[in-house]
Image 1 (cartoon, one colour):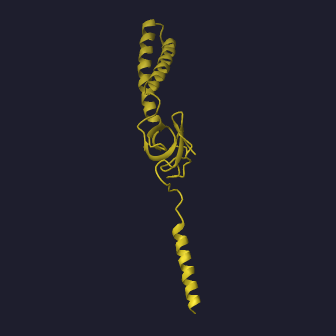
Image 2 (image 1 turned 180 degrees about the vertical axis):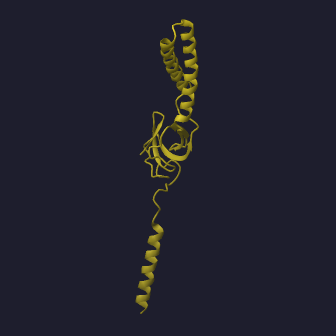
Image 3 (image 1 turned 135 degrees about the vertical axis):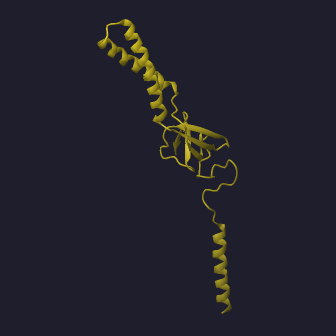
Length: 156
């Protein structure tokens, strides 16, 4: 009877100690070990974990682009309409300038509403934090492991 009791106690102790010996995956042994949050390999210098994603205030394209393209298109359209409606060079020039101003205003307004973009904050493996601005997420979310190449974050 005592042998069975001792055997059962030994079995319970063995199972309990085996349960304590396991580790949770994803927790490294220290700073820079490469096995931290997201199970990142240690060999990727341009890799890190997304810590935060914010919706940006506008597109990454400079604001002047919409105004310039709109101005050129507005000027060309107004000039063509003025050629058909009048034979006065002065009126054609006035229409061209008016079309350029209206086209620039419209082009700028369209661009400001076109795309919101995202600011993606990435904690790199060496401890740096960088911000990447891009128009789409491509499946990236907070906690994702990404590689940053050419100013864009790519999910790994």
